[in-house]
Image 1 (tube, rainbow, N blue to C red):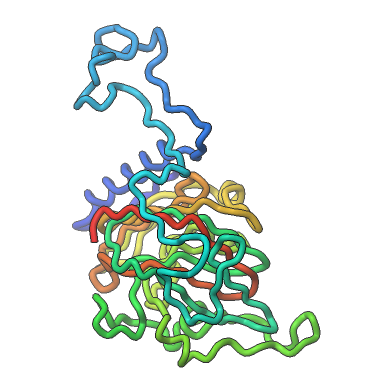
Image 2 (image 1 turned 180 degrees about the horizontal axis):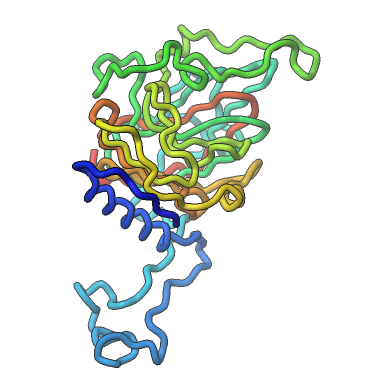
Length: 331
């Protein structure tokens, strides 16, 4: 992990603490698999204080009774203990969308955007209600050049009673907002006329604004922190730890991996294990067991402490979404 210097300011001490926490999360958060074994303690001959193997606290619970000087066991991504399922795998009960462009295919929430029948930028959201601090696990697969994402702590663009609404946004949502993804013009590769996206007036009631875990089958943006239609856009690119304090430009605190390494984390045209942990002002995005990006949002103009969970699709290709599990820490 490469740490960069930051400018002095009233948030400097807190920012340094964030880097330490992010570094620890990156080092401990190893790729998960049900076959992985729990970490082992100190090896013989490597005892801690007192000279005994494993240290003087070995066999007595260690400091705080937490197991002594041992490594944390790798998380099993398939362990659903304490989580609630948001998708039943059979139908879209518990989800709200336009009722036309989202369906269930092969046990997954499904949408398909083609040149002849583009979806534009559209959304589906869970009826579970608001979620503030939480751990959200999702499996996603894309085809073609589809761009998608997990919306969280987000709000409906037309809900005037939603918390923190309204917010500054690009007119029409910008290149990747409510106005749709800017793509090529002219006839489709098939020779057929390029289709027209769904009517914006019909779709606007489902539009979502706010934080997004970016999913990009082209492997340019997966796992980054993107903010949909607020004006901030890409805040923390893949592999970045970023803090924004509101009274100064956002700052890059650390890099988690170089570009070549990041390319090995995402699985184009295949299933990807994705996880979002939102705790207070800190957002952690995990991709296939790797810490993909971290954002600490201390900007009072944009920060949202709660919101809805949903999904988005744009560009062209298919998106499949399944195994949606949520563990709430707070409302």
